[in-house]
Amino acid sequence: MSNTAIDVPTLVIGCGNPLRSDDAAGWVVAERISRMIDPDLATVLVVHQLTPELAAAVSRAGRVIFIDACVDLPPGELRLGLVESAESHGTSMTHAWDAPRLLALARRVFGRCPPALVLAIGGTDFGIGQRLSAVVEQACQAAATRVRELIFSDGAGGICAKVTANA
Image (cartoon, rainbow, N blue to C red; front, top):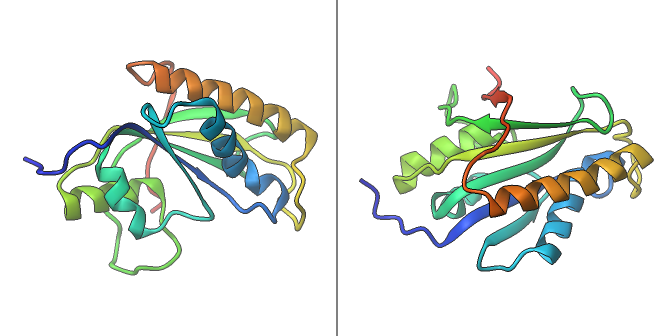
């Protein structure tokens, strides 16, 4: 049983690099969400990458929605998936953190791992630059709308994929 109190119903974590073109998609969507949602309904964090320090905030959320660009999806495609906690192989504290490992750390250190989703956005240009491609810009608007719907819903709604840690 956890002693960790839930501080916020939903934690949104947008991940990306605003200096790498479409890699900024998660960042852009999170910034849009922060302007659309009452802070009592969701806490929105914008980060360059997932780090172990986020485990405390994750453990105090009712649920977590991760948003990130994806090189494995066609440009502009959105994929919503369930994230399951996954223990990492090894104990390295490198920059290679992903959502499943972060959830596992929240459970291990803080005694609580909330339900989590990831919304991946297919990108086309990950080179140096500060502009999203046109197709990803459109996808970011659709993604922000989808995340807003998720924040106001009670469930995951329409999940079609399970996302687990890379082996």
